Length: 389
Ligand SMILES: *Cc1c(COP(=O)(O)O)cnc(C)c1O
Image (cartoon, rainbow, N blue to C red; front, side, top):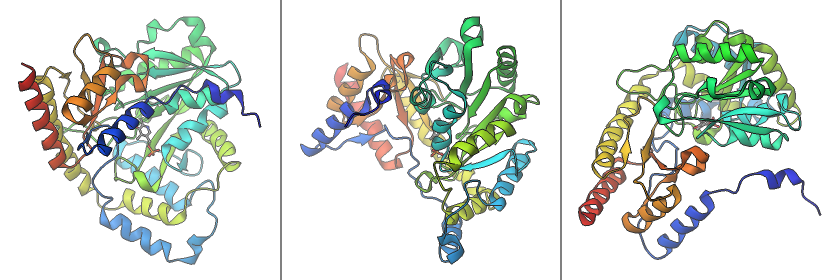
């Protein structure tokens, strides 16, 4: 048996070491508070689950779904984009449901990347942006997201020959892991840059509804020329606390969506229909829980950011996402400091380097743990700090 060489090109999975350490500590009876996982702790709203159960009893939904999704779901997605962003989409050609947006994000590279081709990828960034390209035989070119640039890529710093050679560019705002946001003006500049260099843009925006202080993140699709050169990936995972059900979507440029459909129709057989009906209910039903959930995350955010700054882990207050991107003290690597927090405080976080080289010097806290555990974490950080002084 001989495995394909492409597997060796995948970077080592950084979290193996951390997860091992957590398991060891827990085996020794230590209580670890896990701020590492970005997965809503609150349940999917009840009306969505009820619709899913109802649909699960209907034998029509026991059979193979279509890769392209139910027309009703495509329609509901288009209506949601119209209501939320004022963006008009053709549900037959400019909308495609996905088995969670990660699936579409990963497969998109197969539509663009030939061996040796370049993809522009943010660093730090969500790993599937670069991994899809690597599996397709291409190479990621990393665009650093620097704090002094508000974690936006600097297009002027990308050499012309790189930009001309690249096929695809990934962007993601509100951003995981930095919590940064982007304005319509930034998206405008991104479209202009893409047009200059004949690039396709994929914008990933699963956190557009996880926002605070009255802020409403815009859609990349609000830029009038965006549909000519790009698509936007979205997901029900974070908005409706549906990570376990696996449903998302991609909208925008019809040729890009058709290309992704061609790949997918040869690899998967669509999304279980009961879950598609649940998604229709989520998009068309009451949106009240979004406000409630955001109020909970906002409260947790304020509590955590306050203590982090007090103990010397400098963090900005994010306007969106449930992540806090905190700067660690000088003299440590992200990995060393992550281990130190595990050993000395019993707190697990994600080392910034799990998201790329530029993540060095940072750690990521997720707000998706219960209020009790968060409170306990805050107390532990506070007494750890007192002991150290
Ligand atoms: C959570 C997340 C996703 C994945 O969402 P699914 O729809 O659950 O696959 C995509 N992109 C980013 C940046 C994320 O943080």
